[in-house]
Image (cartoon, rainbow, N blue to C red):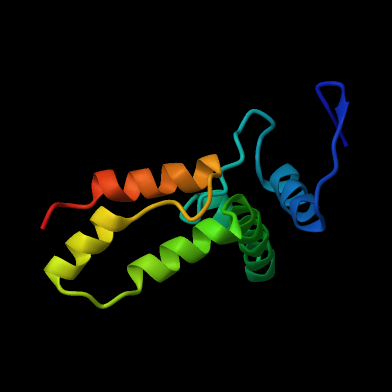
Length: 114
């Protein structure tokens, strides 16, 4: 498909969504794919399920494994208030990647002092 002079590729799910859009919407209507949007509710269950899986996979790819592991491991601990405070104070990036440094900085700056 060509958009603004650029050739783009899109998934079979997006092709189905575009076909439904052409059937049910005027050309000047913006495609609203929020889960509660009227257009989204018109789509078949299979199409919405496939769309959600595609979006979930894209979002999963945005978070590197090391950051994901840090967040899961850090927040899955069962600690007392004092132990949490120590963990927050001692939190350091596991590597020097900018995203890991930023993630640990956000955790340290946003969690309350207990």
